[in-house]
Length: 429
Image (cartoon, rainbow, N blue to C red; front, side):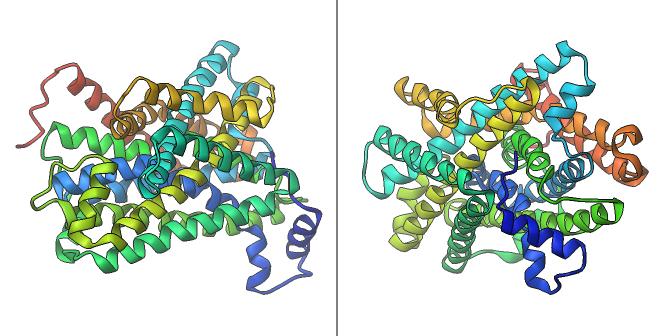
């Protein structure tokens, strides 16, 4: 999976052998978590976060926080798997699970990859069409061309790709920092929303599951193990421990930024829309409503961040799709074919006249339903000493992982029960 330049690889080796020191040398290890973090700031997050903030104010911020903590745990486990075994999660699944189960896992993961790309691709296209007053289909074509052009940089070594994605992440983060400076945030209410779990009604539950699906992403769990599997030439367990230390620090920092961006999205929507515009549920409506409420600058910044999010996450989604197919089936298809297959559903949705933002929210619910597959596989492999050796996770981490996966499974089960009309008396209001 990893196509590192010789200069980067030799630099990493020099750090591990003690020949290079200083904080700048540690930056050579940065990249995998930054790329994976893009999945936590994709346009699906925009759709669910706008609905959460507009409809429920700051009430659902605790869901964003919980999802981010679960994401940190599972991304660190995924990175650990790749560093220790030299294989990614899909490859290990193919090697250790029965063939029928592998086929089922691959099928579910492919559906998740298409749902992911639907959200990412549509998000970038919506941003372009609104910002430049273009037809949505034109925005989609531009998004397709730009993402494919960025994907071509992978052939020059992985470091250029990491720098491009990192720059787009910085754009998203700076945009939402600016949004928080423009919007009037009720900080005490936001703090309460983070610390006090509440689901006011079944619609809030649907959005909460969407937030989980948009934040803890199946393809990101697969991808992170692939990004770390051959990044450093580890010679022994001492090297592995050093690489793991750097990886864990990067995961916490990168996903902390992603978590803050998601919370900023909810807070901006709560500040701008909850009082008087609580029915705002679409990206297009949010943009048009932001202009008179917070000014043209806020609306333009919102779209700029959406375009950066759509393009970067679409690139990362295609990379993950490649790795999933190669890992499960041992098949590698040309990047242009992979890009074509994963973006076709987005064109079909637009051609059918389906509401774009509603399609984004539904795609996130699909992702949340598919999420237990890689989560459970990751828990199984990371706890097996025959695979991980001395790096198998201990009882505390294993328990936390099981609790996190159980929380996601429980939310999914409740969502399905609500969808089929099964009463849930514990939902207040």
